[in-house]
Image (cartoon, rainbow, N blue to C red; front, top):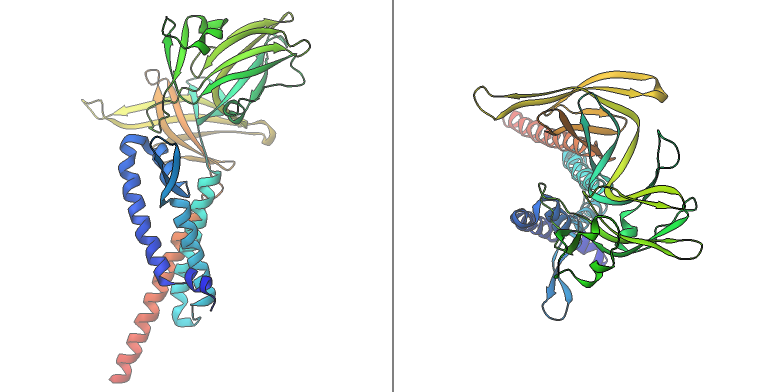
Length: 384
């Protein structure tokens, strides 16, 4: 047997991965106090290695395997063991099912970590919405208000464009937006003598009275990363600068005129548009008698899908989500004195795999227990 095959199929590797996984879960759970759930998940579980940055020289070295490394090694160990070490017989049918169950679980988690999208749909009572907003990712939106009085033309540019400080341009726009500086999280302050030099280039909009300083990102659920950028608009024809604005998540739209047309731009949460509308008919927030402790909060909604000719009502409440068109809508929260609902919208292509995994593991353990019980019973009968 080749050494690398022996290594990947060994019991020692399996036990080591399990031990490392226990340690990783422990330190990752402790880190949630400082980093929050999202921050700890990205750093510890959705990474190949944890890195230590050597102070003073800016060099990072790996010091512990991350969730991806441990998961891949364990997955390779299970698959290799099925081909190399496993001895197929009816007496080990249950063990084989358990192996397939664990493999399915690992694959399902890999798919979820890479493809799951969490967003939020915020709807006021009596209003409708056909989009949800990402909880972590932002985008740069440029809006053309000159199309008509009823509709605007929106040009959305990705978060990667902001991070890489690439120019935002579109063939239908007569201007280009250049990203002078991007901050993943920033603190907004009133402009004074302590403002940095790059803030002084802002000569339009709210940035005339405010400026931003970068601060570390947060992964805590109740905290917001206020993505901020300094943006310059210049003419595509002669490269003449029209102005420089400060845009930040939560800022109102920065409005400006260009060649006789009205435009605006803003940094907002990335939007996912859906082919259906959800209208909030009524939101209920029940509390335990004499307290402010929530007993139940629920959303009575009307879902309209024009392409399918559907118009149906659903009730979404705690632990009873709506599953529709590959999406799952959870009752997440509420706002504006119980007149606004917040629905968590989850798109996860691997959402069924954990259930399949649990069924396989349950069947495997049951079958293996049944085989052991049958073998034990046969031996006792022979002795008697």
